[in-house]
Picture 1 (cartoon, one colour):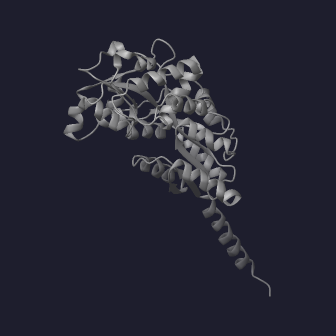
Picture 2 (cartoon, rainbow, N blue to C red):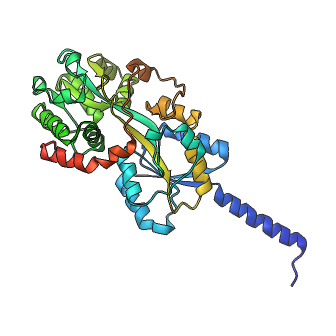
Picture 3 (spheres, rainbow, N blue to C red):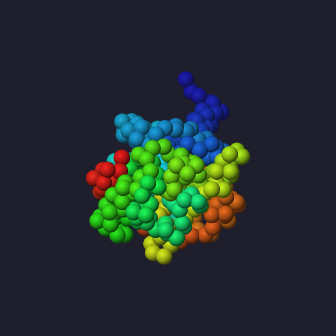
Length: 338
């Protein structure tokens, strides 16, 4: 039985529409858990017509899932926070090398590798109780090991990636011996055993339980932007130091992602990664989640970040943070940094 040319044309049109619908999809595995990212994704879909299917979870769970799914994985992109976690995805062979003039032009070289890219940064600062600690005594990370701070230092776990990345940067700049001396000195100065997250450290400093602690800047900015009167009152007691301004600069970590080797929607995935480097998306990171844009000279409007002032950032290549992670953990364990 012969099909009319009209039916054949209709069948081809239907097949084309099905193929088009399939390409207008992006499957994103994300370990970023910020409500403010909703606008980031919605705007991309509005601009491109590409629907984002998002799976959220913890980094290790998502990496294990991608690995187990193998060649049949529906995931196109993996997004997460912390350079070490991105490096782990690379070590597992999950990312595909990506040559993009847009990404290479917009993302500074120290914030990208051949297969993953940073899209925002956060600095690890020293927060202190204004009535308990003098700012001149805590100008550098290694000052946290000074005996004059005995009984005043609080911290989150030594196994947390934020602390591991900081110690990795100390190893990269000053060597293992200096990194271990710092870790041991901090342990000797602890006001209590490590516990809680960065927000808990800030609140403990504000309450006087600790004199000094480390925190990522977006936690500080979040407290400064809080609508809760108690949070704002607490922050009146807290000062912020940009460490190592006279040497290497303040340690920064990143949020980023990459294209997965088995991505079924590579074209859409590349469009999304390039979109994350656009001025508009970069402003979402800064204004929505209190992070700094990875792209230089992007104008943002975040009073909390602006109130922290300008600072010299450490431009250690993100690969180096990952390179020394294992050694950092060994050093912290040896120092008794729980």
